[in-house]
Amino acid sequence: MAIHSAVGASRRATRDTNQYSVFPAPRAGIDARANIATNSIDTCITANNLVPSEYGMKIRPGYRLWQTGLAAEVRTIIPYAGEAADRTDDRIFAITPDGIYDVTTDGGTPVNKLLFTETTGDAGFGVYSHYVDGAGNDLLFYADAANGLFEYDRVTDTWAQTTDITATAGSINAFDATEIVYIVSHKLRLWLVPRNSTYAWYLPILSAKGEAEEFFFGAKFKHGGELVGLYNWTVDGGDGVDDKLVAVSKAGDVIPYQGEDPSLASWSSIGTYFIGTMPKGVRCCSEYGGDLYMLSTLGLTSMRNLLSGHEIENPTGQTVGFKIARFLRNDLRDYGEENGWDLKFVTQEGEMLIVTPQRLDATYRQYAYNLTSRGWGFWRDVPILSGDPWLGRVVLGDKSGNVWRMDVNVDAAENNGANGTPIKYSILTGYSDMGTPGRYKRVQNIRPNWAARLPPTYSASAKYDYDVTLPAALPTTPVEDAALWDVSNWDQAFWESGVLTPEFSMQGARGHGRTVAIAMIGESTQESILASWDIAWNTGHFR
Image (cartoon, rainbow, N blue to C red; front, side, top):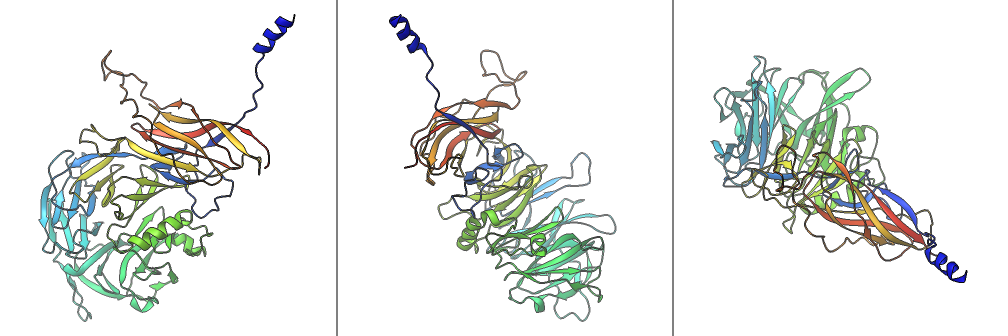
């Protein structure tokens, strides 16, 4: 009997003392304004190449070569959608310091369309505007601070300096197309801003040529500075939806105007706001969804925020950029006078993207904001000097004369998508006391849950008591791309279903502490969404 008891005891299951929890992927994204001890796992301390999405945290897209052979930096990308239903009129133009190039053909060779007279300074850092005149002509304009205003003729497929705009009789200034640095369409009317000025020219409604009138903004700029640009802002002021014209100065004065005709008394300003000094260039404001977003040394805000009384300099305020204000202000302080700042909306990804100049260590960092989950993450390792969405994907230009398209799942791939490098990602969640404040915890296992064709490689660890370092070593390179039915051959391919499926793999953890966070780094070569982590842990005493 004693022997049977001993045998029975040896087979009796050991009581499981572990507790089990799920850390959901922090869809609220980075929150740099919050105290690290807020005990929230809805946000994260950092997320690189993992961006909040509708289902979790998504690996950003990779990029492949579109065209190469440009002899200088690609400083502006212009997508043009023509009238032809078969898209034969569509174009992609790349602007370099020496001219305008057609880079429409995937895998093709750049075709020079125009050579600039001035190739130094800010040549190539410009803005563009589509405009349809009263005759139904679909026009495209480009302007930069070094060379002025140019117009694209779709019929002849040529670019030329604008020559058919003059100043009205009695104007204080003479109109000079080579001085124009900014152009925008507002209520069917073109506005043009000369360099180093506090006034703008406007043309008659539905006209792209003729006599232009002056309008002076400078008297209302309390903090001084030249006129950076004019922007549309759609708002319901109580008497229906209306488009306002917003003037922004270099020093940060923001003045919205209402009315139909700038020459009439009904045209007037409806407020004055201050957002701090603007970064270098004219691409620091952008319109989306009826709102106007603006980038300044105090961070990112919008006209809706300003109208609601939110103070951009208040880190606890609920402005659109308050969660990443600390990081963004540092970048604006260090790189605010460098070219390369841009504010874009990537509708296919449902994201707003803040493009920043190349950093001193030659790396790149962009701020990505999911418009649905309202969470921030970082893009890293994408060499964006310029870029714009085209057919739902970002086309970007770099400093080496290359044009890339972000439509693959690896980085720096060849034109056919081959030989790219895995996208490196990292994340550190917020800290949690796991419901047992003050008591020590020890994490036993961590298991990330992915929706992916093939799970990314990863190295995960538990971090304790506000350690903000990431794992130092990456795991081995992931399995090469799997094959699809009707594409690859038997006995030569690793087969998979071609649909996103959950993937699970567990790693051990070590250490102990009173608060817990998860740190993870890895590499991905597939479309991947991080859904959550399962963790096993146990609790010690208060000591």
